[in-house]
Amino acid sequence: MWETVDALFAKYENRPLGEKKRLVGESVLLMGLPNDLTGSALFLLSANSDYITAQTLNVYGGNWMS
Image (cartoon, rainbow, N blue to C red):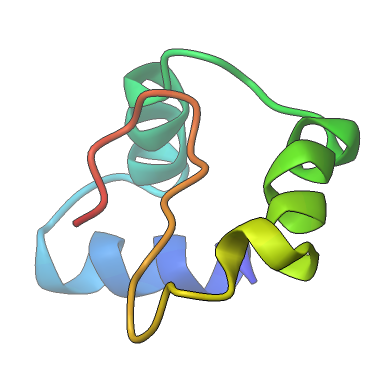
């Protein structure tokens, strides 16, 4: 996927290939692993999340997404 996305940024932002991927990688404060999502997934599967509706749960390692 990154090859396509990076090529589009290169085209529309006049960037060299690979630069956008590098910049995005540098902006992520914590690099996560699949297990880093486990707690959030288990919470959403539990009864503790029954009252939550129409929300976005950002599990993103400190990168701004909203």
